[in-house]
Amino acid sequence: MVKATLNHRGELDVTVGIELGSTDKVIELEDQAQSLGATAIILTTPFGSAVSQQRMKQHFIDVHSIFPGRLWIYHERPLSDNDMSLNTLLEVSSLPRVQGIKDSTETDTLWRIRDQFEKLGVTLYRGMESKLMSGDTEDCNLVSIANLEPELCHQATYAKHDIQLKQNIERKIAEHQLQKDDWYRYIKQSLAKRKVIKTDKLINEHEVEWNVKSETSISA
Image 1: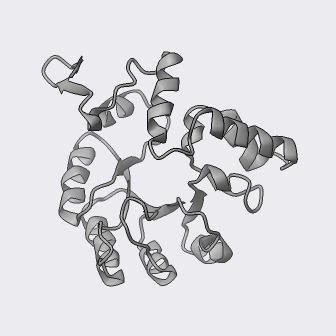
Image 2: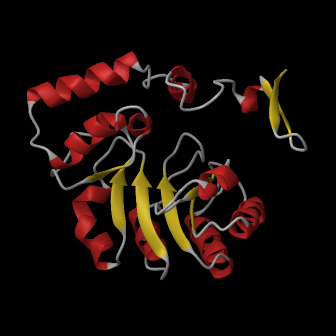
């Protein structure tokens, strides 16, 4: 997927997501992504509720020391089962090549000190559809619904906020079933119907096996 995206990106920048639970595994895939030409990656903290703040910080330092491109921080809890403190986030954000934070939480904690991140050259991005209408109109959004409703997301970022826009967003979130845990399933189904992608099968559920040699997908 990374190779295909990089081959067809044109003038667009590409950030590769690596959502794995240990530093070693992240570095392993980071190396593969770099060999394909990736110049930016986004990663979470190591997985586990017992991971200390110091371990989280060291995780990003270790990856930063090896990967020569830009780093993004994926700030969330459901996947990693832990939370970075504000102090840890600010310390990690001070690393020279950390560019942005995707805040996939339901709080405004980071946004209350947005100016401190901006002084470090780090941009905050809203990562939850439920927070699309939060804060000032110049807030940046990086949400799943952008795959299906890019114009609506553009309006949420730059247009005047009113009740009609809020209702449109809520309607589209419900229509695309993005409130469900397996929201990605419905995004793929919509993209397949629009013929943007060829199949809505899910690899992680073993619905598709990938034949690398022939580069064809086979239903399991």
